[in-house]
Each structure stands twice: as C-alpha cells, then as structure tokens.
Image 1: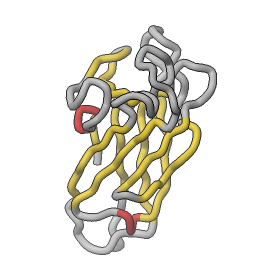
Image 2: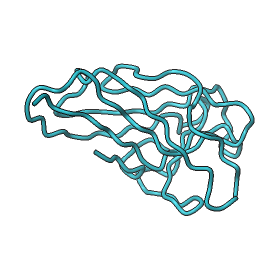
Image 3: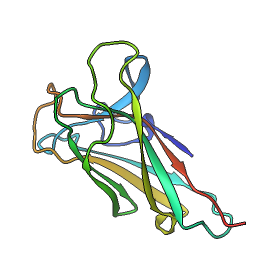
Amino acid sequence: MRIDDGQFAGAFGGRRSNRYLGRSASWVYGQGTQWHTMTANFKLRLQGELTRRATLTLVGMDGENPGKNRIAVTLNGEVIYRGRNPLPNDQCCEEPGNWGSATIDFPASLLRRNNTVSITNLEPDDCTRCPVYVMVDYVELTYRFRP
C-alpha cells in the first residue's frame, strides 16, 4: 500500500503536494515550528490473520546539513523507529535529487483496519529556512496474510 505525501496532514504546505527536484514532497521541520509532525490515516482490507512482520518504507531525503536529523516514526501510537534519519542527505538543487529509501521492520500485530502513521522531526530547531528538515515523497506499507 502506498501513502503519498499529499495524504499527510501537518507537514509544511499542508495536505497539498509540493514539487522538489522532479518529485512530489512534504517536509517536517524542527520541534520549534508548527510543522514538526506529519500524520496520515489509512484503511486496510484485512482478509485473515497477518504474518508476524510487516515493513514501512520511507522514500525521501534528510536535510542537507552534515549531520542526520533525529526522527520518530509512529504507527497507531507505537514508536516503530526512533533515531537518526536513515534517508540520504539532500544535495540541494542538483537534479534528479538524492532521493533514497529506508525500510523499517515492525510487528504486523500493530496494524488495524483503521491506521495512523506519523513522522516527527525531533530536532529542537525553530527554523524553516534551514536544512533541519525531513522530506517525504511517499511511504510504502508491506504486509502479508497467512496462507
């Protein structure tokens, strides 16, 4: 299941997709801004018992600052990742962009029929013109049912 950036509320620019280096993207900045967490709701068609593990793949970039920005990824209120952003750093303005992906493995038992996924920038920064951001093009959820 794919969750496009435009489905996330709370990101810089709201629920509309912005273009950056040939892709659609939404940003979250530091904790000192109003745009520090983006959240998307999605529904699953559950058709039986889920397998033990599922994955969430983030596609995007970290800011172009040398260090990695700290993030938290939450699914239905449970933190499934907390640490340095595993996405590659933005190289600012160079086509086609330094887009990358990172996959987070989590227990499939966290999934429900109605779900919420959030990505939070944990940096204390209050600047929206600084490279202390996390940029997402889309998120992909992979899960399986037992045969």
